[in-house]
Amino acid sequence: MDGYFGIALALIASTLRVSTPLLFASLGGLVSERSGVVNIALEGMMLVGAFGAAVVALSSGSPWLGAAAGAAAGLVFAVFYALIVIQLRADQIVAGTAMNMLAAGATPFLSKILYDSTGSTPGLPIDARFQFAPVVLAWAFVLLVWLWIAYTPSGMWLRFAGEKPEALEAAGVRVNRVRWTSVMLSGALAGIGGASLSIFLASSFSRNMTAGRGFMALAALIFGKWKPFPTAVACLLFGFADALQIRLQGVILWGTEPVPVQFIQILPYLATILVLAGLVGRSRAPRALGLPFRKP
Image 1 (cartoon, helix red, strand yellow):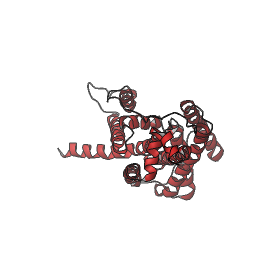
Image 2: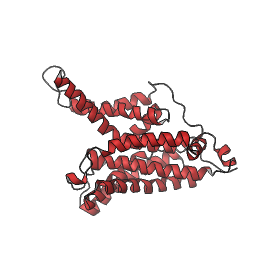
Image 3: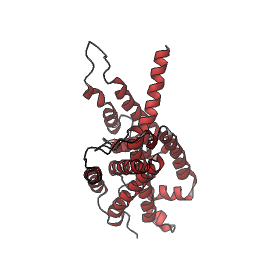
Image 4: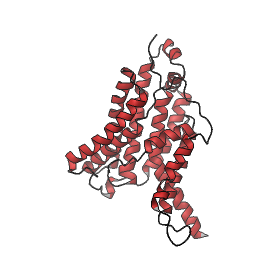
């Protein structure tokens, strides 16, 4: 019994750890999409955040400076995305996909310049890595985002920007200014999510290390119906699937041979597909999501 209890505790701890990047990224997506801007670029924001965090943590020896650099890298990336989709009114899906491709190409290029390697950055010493702080920080942000959206005037502006932007503009609040702020905050949160990959779950940045987590965060957002706490529960679900596949690798479930690792590794992605396929019911997106705003 003690052995099973220990396994259960280890699985819970692993779930909390691996769901942390998803929590940050999904909160970033929530802030952006509640304002009316589709954020397919979460994957790219996480990737540049992971790279920036690893570089600064390695040079400074401080994981907190690394996390701040990850947030800053995600924010700068979000500024370019906001310029394209808000100011220039480009298609948000196409622009987000292009930004993801840019991040996937730029990070190994910069790694080659800095470290003469396109595969990964040098390993971080233990003092330059987080041990548990990002888990606490992620759940604190869940609470703060919920309080902000539900109980503050700026949170109300955010909701109206995504639901009834014309009414918000008529009330004297500039819709595009709210959307700019939301996308930039989204980038900072996603950047911290990326930082939690490279200086918390791993000890360095590696090429394409986000491995689709930005899209999982979007799936969690849909699962949670664009609400902070249900979205956090969805992140835990995906995190559990990820933690389970790590635990099951090499385990013999039947016969004498372990299950091929490739079949085990698809568990988190299978859970994402099932959510997106609508097994959990239909979610209503903000009414103005994806629609560029033009002042009357």
